[in-house]
Length: 149
Image 1 (cartoon, rainbow, N blue to C red):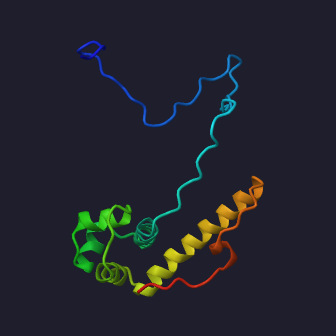
Image 2 (image 1 turned 180 degrees about the horizontal axis):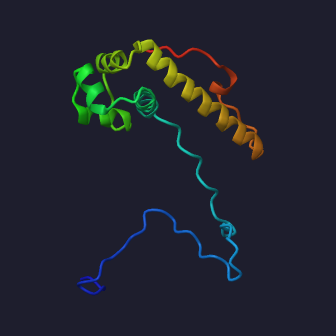
């Protein structure tokens, strides 16, 4: 049985709410309680997020619409939107068609996504160095080539 009033909405926050401002009007910096676990590291981006980001960035740079690119690639507009948002894993044929519609080759698309992943790895290593963790990842040692089959 529910304990709240029948016509009252029950709100469950998805994100931690900001602390209220200090009495003097200054912004408060969040304080972690003593003994609390450290903040989790940001999750590593998925390949579909990286590829989708490149597709969207290239489409917007060319000032083209989803409809225009989807028609030229012969894929549905909702599917292209889901690819750009990293919600769907695309086959190599679909990725090649989307890349061609944007004037890119499949290798160009994958290379741009690999560049984004390498940038993420470098920034992650730099953050680890600033926090004194001193950990390095294998990808931080190499600025190499990404091969996809």
